[in-house]
Image 1 (tube, rainbow, N blue to C red):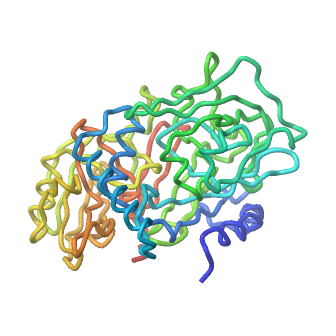
Image 2 (image 1 turned 45 degrees about the vertical axis):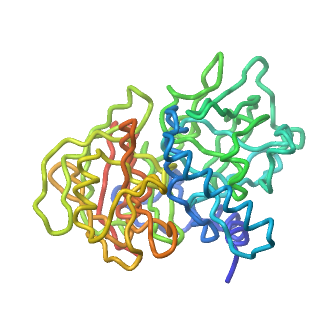
Length: 412
């Protein structure tokens, strides 16, 4: 079976050819302003629920709760013991389930595998400026080897996380391309320092932020996101995310592939005043139960694996799961792995998107217990992450300030 790394390498060339391939669109005939890129599922990742929760707290600048921190500490100690006695058992790290896309930077192109993140607005990468002890196998961008790289004097960046850690570095301007979609003068934030979460994530060499430029972290002059710079090259000012359950997916820019969804696209306006893809779901249903109308304000975030909901909704969901309970040791709701979970549906206007119960069985916790992909947080962060993305084609319509969700053929 091919490794995740080899699949990414093989897709570098494929991504360059994707835009030229025939595509089915819901609008005008394909032109040069439409682009399609593979996103590779990291089958080697071993997601660990408390680590996924901790990442959300850190990302959105919230303190990590004591029970989440304790769960991480316990797992780290277990890993240290396993390694000290020479055990071959794989201990899950805080590597989460990841979907990565090859991105070319510089002249000649240097290919780095980046996480497309609709919950942030920085294009930052590991580089030869990154402290050596913070690099664990990531590919490094080397601006000195690019004839088109130019350091932006006086500009720096820093991202502070809820646990007190941070990532920071310098800012360059260089050519950035995803397949045939190219921006000539894109701000590339090179890391001099990265937090431990990213150091331990050996397959990910950086992030491509696809939220709004208003929350870009470059100072003293904020920089535009890749999408903002590329939007005038597109047939339509939008992109779509088509993530799959345990397999590869796709991002499309400039068009909507009619073959990628089975139902109508239902749209909801966004509130991007905070810089995020913030929208309001109209309610939810658990299994075959009646739909409950209640506004659920949330951020659509492809950089978060879990679906984080208000506590009353989460408790109602796990009440429908035989034997499920909140495990203080795991800092989340767990259940017997063999349990058949109910579906979870959420409202988009008057329509519903249904997440199969199988998608909500997130990861093995301990023994025969599994950690749920739907959780809640102490800080009240509400996120529609990859658990929701896998159940739909998601349309990020920049031009009309709206987000669309459409049912699609699901892969189990």
